[in-house]
View: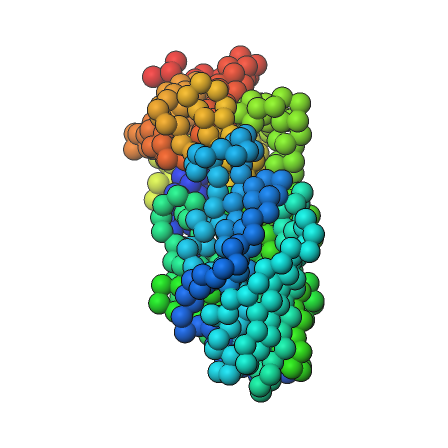
Length: 516
């Protein structure tokens, strides 16, 4: 690979890392503009938008029901849930240490989370209703509330093993019939702390996963197409409301002060209303999400490399099933990928050797035709053909490896499997940065050694300086990135050094250290 290609590849990786760290973590994709359904009128804002106050306390206490990975506290007011706690694997049941548990409110905010609203001013009381919560069985409950305007009930079935809840809203309107009903997710503005980091509002429509900017209001006519589910997510967790009726025709996201709301929108055909939904709060694990709904696993979004990233994720989990340590699984995965890509690396190094042999002749051509670029290019191509050198053969093997690098980066950066997962010694969480910054510092040194062992055709002093700075730049980038990702980069660099020593001997290449 020539010097320009090497620098271009290195800069591409740095730009990707920088974009991921400094841009994607702060700004989310703006809502996609979709064509409105001509058969649906523009819905007015739900009447419960005016306050979103905490449910009024009553004599009926919330019911707490345990699930396999935590517990759910069912609300006695307008909000369906008072609390929802997920307990990550490895934390002991019943532990009082709050750091071992993930509270739903840390993701959505401290206000009501799932509630029913309509677009008629006759039913402003929906937000302040309180009722009786009755347990029908160990997993089935019913909440009923009534006043002079409306009678509302929530039938609840808790799936303890799977960790989701089937929720069916029923309403009897005693006054004028509303045009639209809304099942809404409500949350406060995100903060950059704790589990709220990377929070965004998402929905699934048209077989695609879409994200909304929580800081920007969305016009009510923006999306009026079938929506399968809505949700609030961060890097590792998701709270979602899935439509079970097949009749949710759209969503809206009005703002009220510091609150955000995302809603499924249902046309109301009569004074009797039944709306079945499914609610999930928990990790963005592919298997767990598919158990809730076939399309919910799209919340694990690795971008355009998702198919490749899924394959890498499944292979890493398969390795973990034998080893029992994700850090070791990352090391083995890296070694296996490097071995599989060795033929491409060999081809690239072989091409580099050919380039080195004709480098003096290329330099003479540059001096001879320095004032005639067209003639220079023609003579250079002729020289390369004569000596059997193909410029594409030098850079193509490296470019073919780039999608694997980017897919692996996304997997190690955002996979829930690494969340709070220990590796060894001082690294107790592969999803957070190395607390002592040992691995980024070691990575910088190893990459510098790798650079010295790798032959290069770069002769320009400025380009040589840029290449020499790359290990330091990479090391600085890795300081704040997850330890699992740094472990991959470190392992990759060590294996690359071993491969380079073998290639240098096999091809008779001269490393930079020997030539300087």
